[in-house]
Length: 338
Image (cartoon, rainbow, N blue to C red; front, top):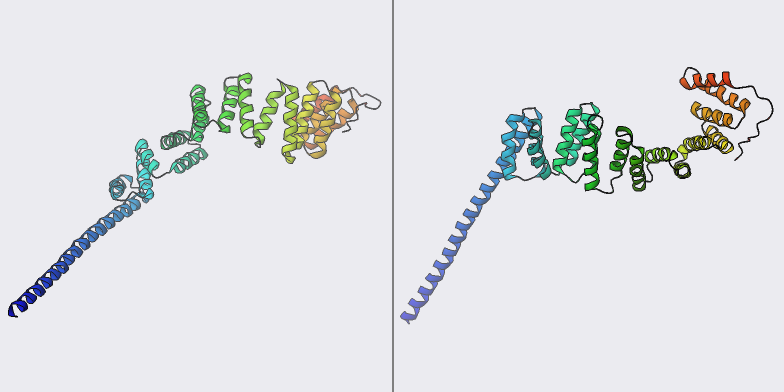
C-alpha cells in the first residue's frame, strides 16, 4: 500500500513538473515573440520616420538631404509612395535614370508626363524633352511619349523626329496620333504630300470621329482624288453638324476647281446660309458665281465680304475683284437650288 502511494505521488509530481515546464516554455515563447514584435514595430517606426523626414526635406527643396532618408525608407517599406518620393528627389538632382527606375516601381509614368506637359506650357522645351525621355525610360511601351519627343524635335531634327514617330507605331500600331504626326512630318518638313497621304488615311481609319484628321485628309485628297475628297467632306458634314458649313464651303471650292460651277454655287450657298457671318464663305460664293459667269451675283457676294470684314485681306481681294468685274446684265442662269 505504501508502495502504491509512493508511485502515485511520483506520477503526480512528474505531471506537475511537465505542466510547469510547458507553461514555462510557453512563457519563454511569448517573451521571444513579443521581443520580435517589438523589434519589427521599432523597425517599421524607424522606416516611417525616415520617409517622413525625407519627404519634409523634399518639400522644402533640400533634395540632397532628403535623398539618404528616402533611400533608407525604401529598404524597409516598398510602398509605391516611398518610391515615388525617392524618384522626385533623384529627378530634382539630375539623376534621371535612377528616377525612372524609382518611378517605374511607383507606376508613376503619368507624373513624368505631367512634368513634361507643364514644361511645354512654360515653353521650356529642353525640360519638356528631358521629362518625356524619362517617361520613355519608365514605360517604353507608351506611344504618347515618343510622339511628344518627335514633336519637340520636328523643326530642328526631322530625321530624329521620324524615328520617334516610327517607334510610337512600333509599340502601338493602333495609335492614331503617331500616324497623324508622321503625315504632317512628310507634308511639312519633307515636302512630300504623296508620302503623307497614306498616314493621314490611317490616322482617320483609327480615329474616324476626329474632326481635325478628317478635315486635313479631305484637303490633301482634293488634289489627288476629287471624288474621294468629296466623300470625305460629305462624311464631315454628316459627322458633325457644326462643321457642315466648312464642309459645304470646301466642297464648293472643290467643284469650282473641277469646273462644276452650278454645283459649286449650290454648296457655297448652303455654307453662307448656315454661317452668314463668315466672310470667307461669302468669298467662296462670289468666286463660284464668277466661275459660273454671273457677275452681278458675284458683286453682291464680294460686297458682303467687305461689309463683314472691312479692314482685312479678304476685303481688299474683294475690292480688287469688284474693280475688274464687268457689270453684266440679265439674270444668272445658275440658280443654286439644292
